[in-house]
Length: 234
Image (cartoon, rainbow, N blue to C red; front, side, top):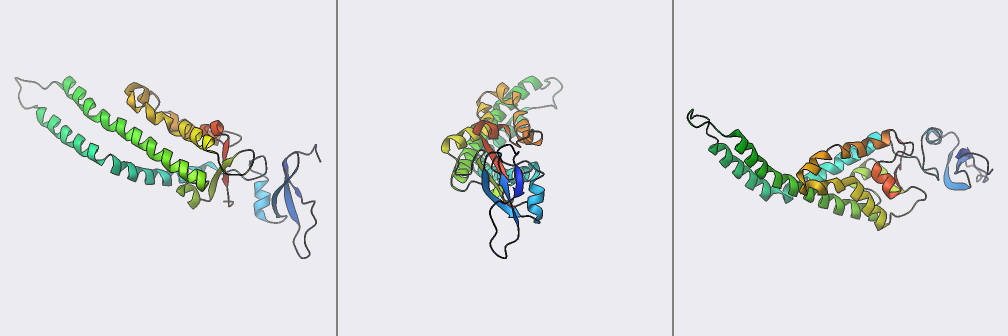
């Protein structure tokens, strides 16, 4: 069967007495451990969607986006608490800046150029430290969850899992680190305002990439050689 393309085929192993006929996934070189009843809709639908090389169905984009949204809400709460002192300080400085902007005296018109320069000087430290705090939060959260659970909280809710593309198993630290760096490393550019603003498009490109990728990998998946798989078909 070496010339047969990868896909679902009748299981060559004889079923136990009373067991319904099954299909087994052929990866193009050998039989895998993935089997399904012949008439079970799951197997028929999996046959029409992309899989890992060993036949595990890949997650659709919408569940991935939903999982990321759930995780983002959790990280946002943590980030809000971490940067709260800085936000309070910024609000006080903003109030002082507005008070100094006197627009009622026609003999002394306000200097809006100076106002916006001061506004930027007050705002940017918050943006910078928020970006760095967000990166640290994501890095710790994803590193621990992916290493020991294979999924984030959002992925658990939607029955998704991250795994090496070529074979099942625990993700190595090297793959996890590379995945995090490619997905969230742009946040580190918050220390350079112009570079940070120039990369505003990157997270959207990375997040949307699975929509047109034939392996349904985001850019961070490609870098780390991982796939997000669907544990239960939806």
